[in-house]
Length: 170
Ligand code: FES
Image 1: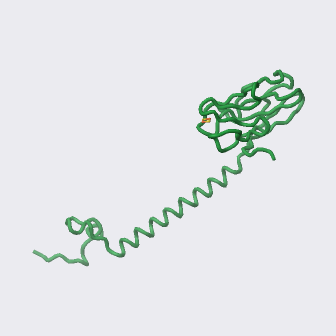
Image 2: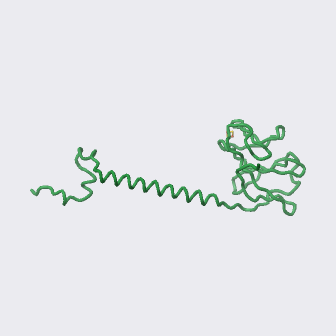
């Protein structure tokens, strides 16, 4: 029988040992290869996250008429969907000539918030998170982020949604 020749062995036999003792053995070059490939994978992953965050920052929103001026009474609320179907928002008439609109999804665990006219604030029934009607900022935890605000404008007797703004106005 011909003696085994190390130089003639195929690479797979070296990397996938058939002997139990060889399974735990990791050659320096194999370890280096593992570190190099892992680092490369992490580098590519970070590039992908960076590219994705760059693209998501440039989101464009549709213009959408959401109500006629005077359609809801002072203190009244209208639910509408913006910017996509199924994404509920609240339009609140806060004064004779004042409107505010926010996402209805609580920034804590996504429960549907509602407007409390009695307390003049937006409340989440799940964990008693309260938001300011003025700018959507958190009045009481557990939410830590403000409610995303819908940017509004008026045109031809209508309220038009222009986009979403997650930061409250200062
Ligand atoms: S989901 Fe709104 S406070 Fe927790």
